[in-house]
Structure formats: structure tokens, C-alpha cells
Image (cartoon, rainbow, N blue to C red; front, side):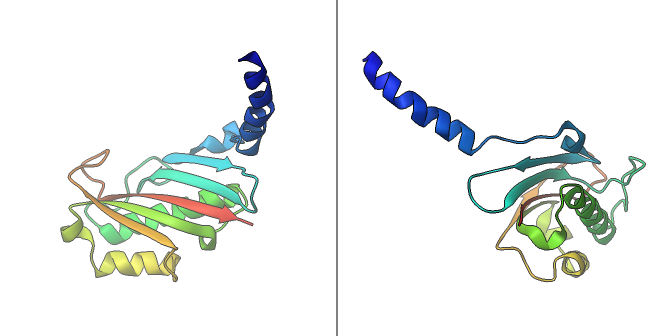
Length: 149
């Protein structure tokens, strides 16, 4: 039995080495969400940015009741977060939108705001409707996965 475990030990340590998270404490807190660069044994650095909310640098919610203003602020926050890890908006491969009352708030204004920052839709796009977010005056949150070459 011990012999089998001794044979599996090198394989286990190889797997742990392949996908270690490389987290720089200076990068983990970005305005309103978290940025985690993770390095894998395949080309490109993956960056996961979650819980981006319409909050400006002063910590204030932008555009109460205005989906266009809130979407614009979130994409400005995403642009800053990606630049801090050497990326840009064109590196986004997956985006998830959590929109309060999706059918009511996903409008032409929202689509225009997104198109201004992402002229080409990412490979994976997901919309989720929710009844509430962190604060009542927030209409959406966005999470992205980017691959930086």
C-alpha cells in the first residue's frame, strides 16, 4: 500500500505545480471586485475579475437608475483592472452579466454601452436576472475572464 502512495506522490506534486495561483496582494483589491491572475501550463495568463460594480474611485455608486451610466462605469473599472495585470478589454474571453430585473433593464442603452467597450462579443456571454444586488441603487454586476498573451 505504501509503495502505491510513493508512486503517486510525484504525480500529485506535478499537478499542484501546474496550476498554482499567482496572487499579488497589491492586485487582489481593485475598486469594487477582485482580480486574480492565475498561471496554467498552457499559453496565456488567465485573469478572473469578479463583482465589478458601478462604483467610482471615490467609492460612490454612479448613475442611480441609469443602466447606461452604470455599464460605462463598470467597463471603465474593468479597463483599469486589466491594465494593472498587463491586459486590455480585447483580452476578455468570457463575460457574465447579473442584471436586476433583466427584462426591464436590458435595453438598447445597455447594448450601446457594452458595444462601445466590447465591439465584438466575447466567446462566452451569460446573462442572469436577479431580484437584488449588493445595493438597491445598483442595476448590474459584471464578471469577466480574460486571457492575456
